[in-house]
Image (cartoon, rainbow over all chains, first blue to last red):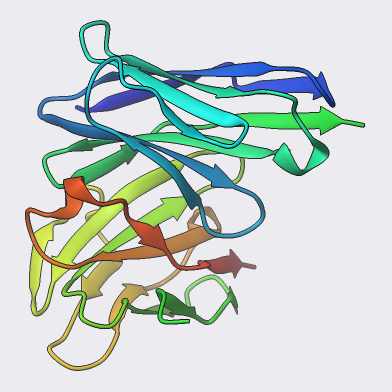
Length: 109
Length: 117
């Protein structure tokens, strides 16, 4: 069975801190890894990673994939209260997208 | 906004009733996915459908749950004889065609929150 594990489960930081969220996976037919941000409603797409070692960046967020060690990290620098959300990691195995349970991030002012 | 549309947003059912959740995919998309999210948990895959076909239903409970995606109209997730444990948020996503999903991210609807009393 495909498995995606995220850590930590939850995290509380202060504005301005830098955070690193982890995602490891074991799947039968890896295609790509995705990060989503979920506030109260639908998950919103952040990054899609298919190649090892190539960093994807969007503003204060960045992510990288290691296909040899089967993990990815999501970094957020200079955190703001608006970054408070659940961050979901998901992996395409074939055409099926399997999600981790998420990391709940709370950013305190 | 031509994104994935789900309705209703909230649905309350008593134990034993039926729940019908609707999902209209992005215009032109022929593949639909349903996911369930229990409180404080990630999204769990339920079923993947193409127009008039079920491609993968490995995440669907064996009883009481069914899904369809007819040639015309929205995809429907049906839960018969609901129980309290069915209370969850149900999300739908769509993609253009088979085999291309892993090249593009799934975009989700806002979900239907089902509460069984």
